[in-house]
Image (tube, rainbow, N blue to C red):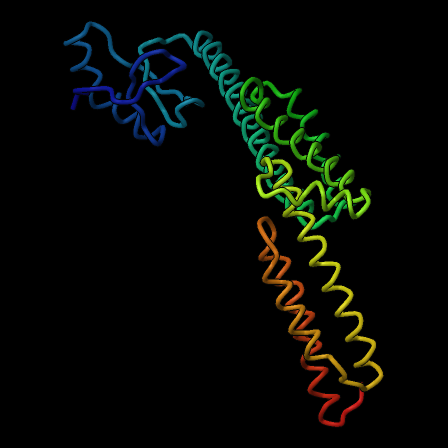
Length: 265
């Protein structure tokens, strides 16, 4: 049965060729079809060879094994270059994904005034940018976008630091306007979150003191206030922060029931 069509394009040979999954199938094709192909085309495949690029066997009318060896070396170089390209592309994608995830975490930390951790993570983001700048598959628009996100986080970090050290009256004046610009509105949300978390920490600490001394005075009221403050938290990282503090509140609720029933802390 002679071939009616060659359906696989071999980039090594630069043309369409038949592709066989095993050498025995390629050799059988030559054995049973070579005479008919010779009569029709004036030449016929006489040997099979493995193609690294296609991952299977082709047949050829070129009898020279020396030429075949050179072509094999050429194909091997193509495969190596393509494999290196894929590795580089995969590494760059992984770096970009990791950087994006870190920036999301930085934003969450900043929205609750966790400055030290955010700053450390931003420094790692800076190293990521340097690494990506040296990669050939992360240039132009992609790199510019990532740099812009890192710079924006540094700018937000700087603004929060400046806000925190301002006198209370100055903070109030700065954030009290009903028509704040976007940057100041963001700072207002962040400062509100910081205040809420500070109050929750203080209330939980007070409850710990009372419960550890087997007293329940005001514990329920403080727990209710903590829950109310948690609901006031806004924007990024809200779910994680609520989950963290709800777990602490639940522990105090269990301890409260134990103390109230006459048990000891």
